[in-house]
Image: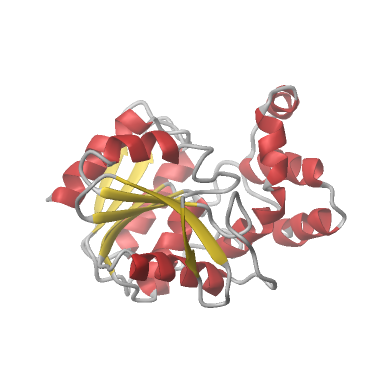
Length: 261
């Protein structure tokens, strides 16, 4: 494990594996460098790149500084880019893809960008998160109701059925989810009401690969089509048989091909 200090003094922990051009992986909600999709993906990508897999602020071995703002998370990514002596490749999943998009729009030293299923909602179809989801999540965390916050995120925001929450509560993963529940308002703040920031996306100048799973809900695929249309010159790729819980072995070849081209 290595650490870098962000602009506001927050310590950001990361692992670095492999050789070659630096590639930073940006996690979605409730995940970290040791938990979620990135460890398996990092192992596959490290055969081709120097992969930097980090704990977003408030998670794992990274510290936190209040108050939260999306700009501070952009600063965290910028600190990692500087430590890697950029330019770098960046790949973001879910809300991590939102963070990566915003960072690219800010003009960080990114050479190429890959975005997997940013959780905006552009067509009003499928599950719609409550309009006050940020306020409600913040209140639950303020009251230290971590389990309730995770339940609210999974059921009310993401739209998984109640039975899925009941099953997850019985599994060891539930303890890990509650441990980082306090960062859920951060992801909610990044989403800004699930509105696609088209005015910022259009300013992105770097080559961008936009990805979605063919078995993800129609509204998610429509969202990624809208993201691809908003970012000038971007490529759209639909991964056959994949959902939001994308398999590392399915997405890794696409990332390798794109970043090495």
